Length: 527
Image (cartoon, rainbow, N blue to C red; front, side, top):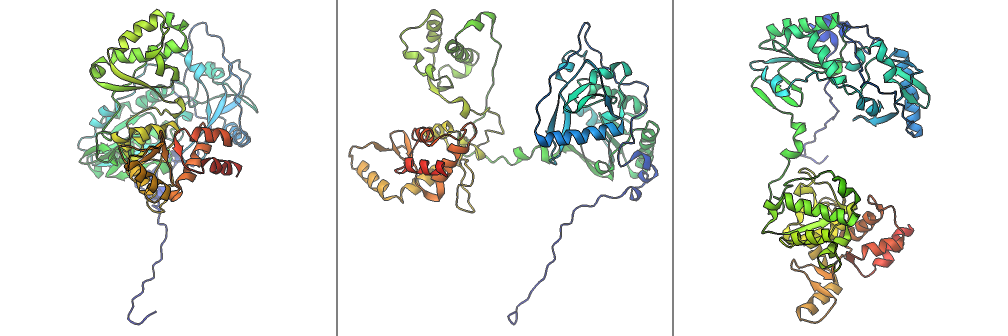
C-alpha cells in the first residue's frame, strides 16, 4: 500500500430475513398442532362435506388424455405417489374422467391441475357470496396490531361427499384416480370453502377476524387485545382440525399485506408490487405518448351473416366499428388497419354486390383510409402493453411511417445505453436520431444526401424527419450491430419459423435496405 493511503476491508454476505421459529412467537407456540410440517392425512368428515350437484339428465363425461413431455410424466408419477400416500386420491372405476396437465408455479416447480371444465359446465352453480374486499377492509378502522394466517392447502382439508367422489375422477398415463378431498379447479370450490370458513368463525366475524377463502386476518386495537384474539382464533383452528403453513403466516405485526393491500394503523393502501408498472409510468412528452386505448368492441354473428364470404365479414367488422364509434370518427381524418389485404382496394373495386355498395356509401361519409396490417404483427392493445416507454408508440406522430415498417416485421428496438449495442429489439424515442446519426457516418449516404440537396434525380429521398430512404425502405447502417439484430429478429422472431435465406431476404427487402443485404442474409442463415 502507498504511504498515507487508507484501506478498508469489507466482508459482504447475503443477509436474508430469517423467519422466527414457532417457539419464538408468543401465543402461537402454544398451538404446535395447528402448524404441522405437512398435512397429517385425510381430513375427518365435517358438518358439511363438499357436494357436486350436476344438471338433471347429464351423462358422465370422459375426456381423452393430454399428451405430456417426458419430464412432465416423471413429475406426474411422483405427485400421484404423494397423493396416494396421503390418502387424498384412490384408484377409480368411475365413468367420469377429466384429463390432467401441469402449470408452472412462480418458483419454477410444477403444479398438477385437473381440467374440470366439462364437469364445471354441467355443475349447478353454488351462489354462496364471496365478501367484497372493500367491505372487509372497512372493518379494520382503528386496528394497529395484525396477524395473518394462511391455511396449508386449504381445499385438501375438506372432504367430498361420498356420492360425488366418482365425479372427480381424472385420467392419467398411470391410471384412473378420484379425489377424496376437494381438488383445485372445481367451479364451486371457492364458494364451498368460503361457507366453511364463515361457519367456523361466524361468532367473531367483523369483531376481530376477517376471512377470505383460505386467508385469515386477526386484527386488534392494541397488543393486549391481540393476545386474546389470536388465542381464540388458534383454538378454533385446533378444534376444527384446520392446519396452517407457518412460513406464509405473519404474527404480531403493525403492517401486513392482505388481499392486495398494505394494511397498517393509519389506513390502507394498494400493495406497491401490484401497481409497480403504473407507478413507473413516465410522464408523456408528446401527443403520441399520451395516446391510450379508447374502446374495444365485439359482437356475435347474426344467423344470416354466417353465410357471408370472408371478404364481406371483414368489411362488416369495419362497418360495425364505424357505426358504434361514429361520435368519435365523424368529421375526423383517421386510418383503419385491417389484416385482410384485399380491403385496401374496396373503395376502387368496380364490381360490388348490393350489400357492399350499401356499405361503401356509409364509408364515403368518413374521411378515412384503409391500410393493411399483418395479423401476426398485431398485438392486443391495453394500457400497460402500449406504454410509450417500451413500445413502438414512443416513436412520435412524425415517425408513423417508420412505426408501420417496424411493426410489419413484428420487431421492437431498444438501444442498450451501457454496452452501446441494440441488446433487445425495442424502440425508444431517440431511435430515429440514432439512424440519422449513423447515416452521417456512411460515405455513400453522405454523397447521396448531397446529390438530393442539389435536386438530382435518384431512387433515394430524404423523409420529412431527415432519414434517407430508398423508395419506401429505410437505409440501415451497420452501426452498433443494428443489421445483425434485424437479421436475428427476422429469423428467430415469433411466427418467423426460421425462414430460408430466399424467403427471409424477400421479407426484409420490403422494409429495409443496405448494399450487402442479400449476402448478409445468406451468410446468417448458413450459420
